Length: 239
Image (cartoon, rainbow, N blue to C red):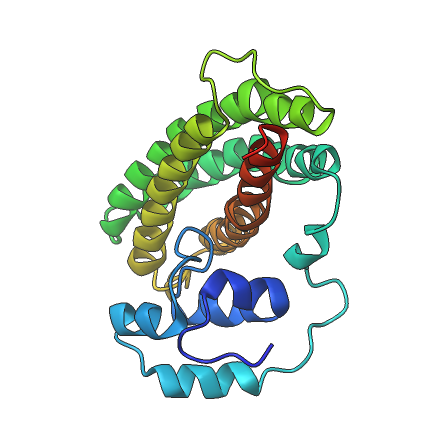
């Protein structure tokens, strides 16, 4: 792929996984906003598209172990949904309680000197409240329906078409993306203050890791799973 300013962010990440961290450093949303062209995304973020494109072109090949969402383009959807649950849903179920505990300690120790922690806590609790039911809806409704389709079964669900729950999931992804963007801005890209203790630093490091994991998680769904599921449904229906 030879990228230009019209190339979609989601397509760039699928072709070049090293672009994920590059875009995160620039504050460019490639998961929920993956449908936008590079030029549009840069304009909205106040960035010069030419400079961003030059930086993208100059990126080194991905380091060993860098997640590659494009590797899932041809995988069976049953395998992909299983991976999302095992790698990303279970990560959130482990990490959200740990981060909540760290956040409580940091607020108690540093809240008076760092009032922004109040809004950080509000956003974190809102994320938790959105994400946990979201995971359940995927595991109990959307993913089983997709797997049944892959096995040749069409219909039989109360929502009629896979496009219904996908639309809901992607709206919820948009909400999560907006909260992550505000968290990143509030925390200075998860940079602990000079007077921050080890727990403060651990909290911000954990939030940064959670953001990265959610970006990859949402990319796998918005850019790969959902389009493939809709195409599969249309093929089964003979459309």
